Amino acid sequence: MESPLRSIMEQENYVSFASLAEARRHEDACVIMEGDYGGSIYLTCPVSLVSCDEDTLAKLLSDLDDAYWRDTEGASLCFEPRPVGSRVAGGTGGGVVLPGLWVHPDLEKLDLRDETEEVLAGTRARIDRKGRNCFD
Image 1 (cartoon, rainbow, N blue to C red):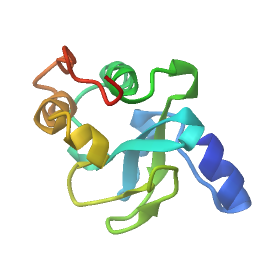
Image 2: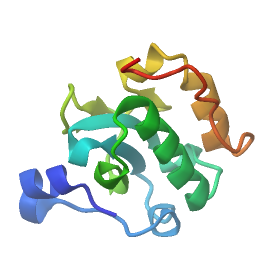
Image 3: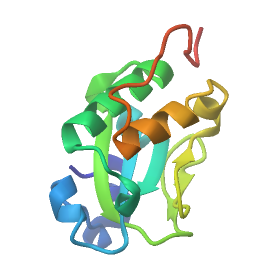
Image 4: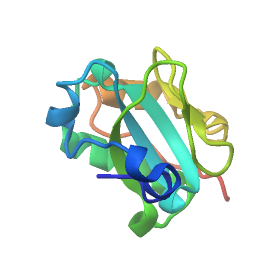
């Protein structure tokens, strides 16, 4: 899937991969989860660190979107070539690709990092969202 915002901003320079399987074939591929049609970047993580499957990633995106924005139609799971150190354009400050997981500061405040890392590592099915929401 592609990011609506970055595909407009970067136009013909924008590249995305159709699936996790396709992204795995590229050394600098990154998973980006966003909400609000690119208005909020939830997380970035090099694909090389993702051990779960694409369905699990979609559930994680849904859980993070529910914690942050609650508009699943505006949520996107993107796979893009983004080397470590690159910025990811988006609202609420955008994001950055680190050698590991980057989580939006508002989601960090909800203490979701460890569970998110476990989901990405394939050792946990979902994050526990009970009582954790940016807007409560």
